[in-house]
Image (cartoon, rainbow, N blue to C red; front, top):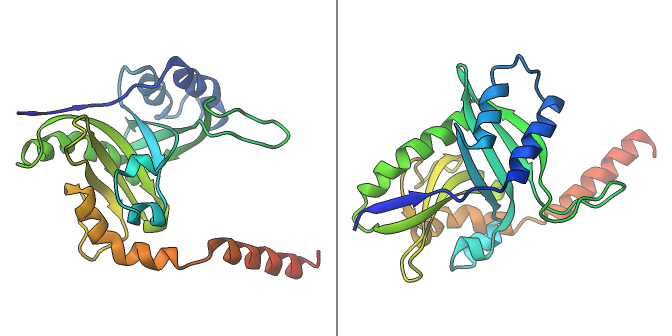
Length: 222
């Protein structure tokens, strides 16, 4: 059975968030302006749902998406000689101007080679999947960010409950045993990144942040 890859589409609120927020980050004359508007409208570029996964969740076993946090959408497109992405957040925001869970807003615009790497990965992953004998049937394509593992990857979620899901890293600082633009089953990927993930789980990040805050306050005398 051939491999079919689909990309879930955001609702119109995401397109409106890009339209309404882009002027806060770019000028209309910027090469990325129109490509990002086109991508948000679905007439060019790419739109992927974004999930964030911590090191402990990677090690927990089972499907990544059952443990990952859905954070919004990445709208990406080529922009002149570079590439750009508009990141849409949908998580709840508290504070003086709260935003409820699920309400999209444009959080930032990223420009540079890492976005180009993402677009290239989206371009080549269908051929990689077609050439993988263990893959067949329908898959949904997502973006998974693993900041504690210094890795970003495409995630191919099988629509067959009994089939494996696949990970396709396009950026990583883990040089040992892990290659970009290579398909791994979730289990194989965990084996590859396991040593780094276990080391990261051992760090108490909250304590580190509190120490840095205390040092800053002491330096400023506050």
